[in-house]
Length: 304
Image 1 (cartoon, rainbow, N blue to C red):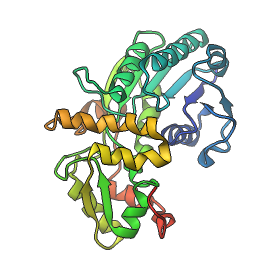
Image 2: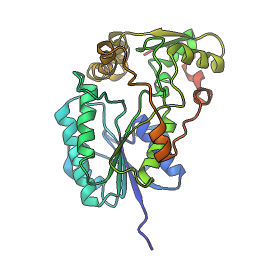
Image 3: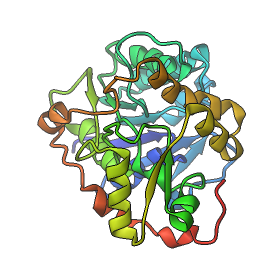
């Protein structure tokens, strides 16, 4: 009998990793998780067999890969290049020793072609280089920005209670907002599709829409008025500082500070053509995502 595939989701306690783990389980795949921390788990992956460890510990990573054939990787929100490179090298070394057939790395952000001054991009670029070195075969997915960010402690309350959608994009910037569920579907496809080894695939939502258009979709599904309010990168950093901490908030804000350097960039406007051809990727309409969220949890809750 052929050996049964075993999938490892690195970063399974985060929202993106948890979505991948759920999608794999829903597809009937064997899956286990690896995450940092002391044993606390995401409520949506409580039934997932999970090993806790540090990506900086080669032995812990090697043990996590024992018997694994496929791996999905989401790296922590760490913005030190040497640390990220060490994480990636430990993963690749362990995956190679385990005989992993396919590794899929989610950058969690688009990556500009030119080198930038922002660690949020350059640390992901470093990791890409390590994962694409050749063994095991890898696929890199580059999502733009997540719809699920809107259903968060820093956006949800203001959106539900005040009808304000605040984000660090200009109101007319067209963005290919992507849901975690669609990211997960693409990851599962990339783990198993033929002929996609060592490719980098931009991955976006069903359409690129402006902030004002996104506000209109939200209003149509939630009822009432929703107004898009552009934030500066500094304002967004301040919003994130409470829930995420100063270091992480500053790193994430760098993604949007780059738009100040290159305001005409279409980095967040994604052509899904390659993902459609290679993965059969078909993201769901944005309105479907809005309709599926339990927005009532944010009623009478303050932002942050």
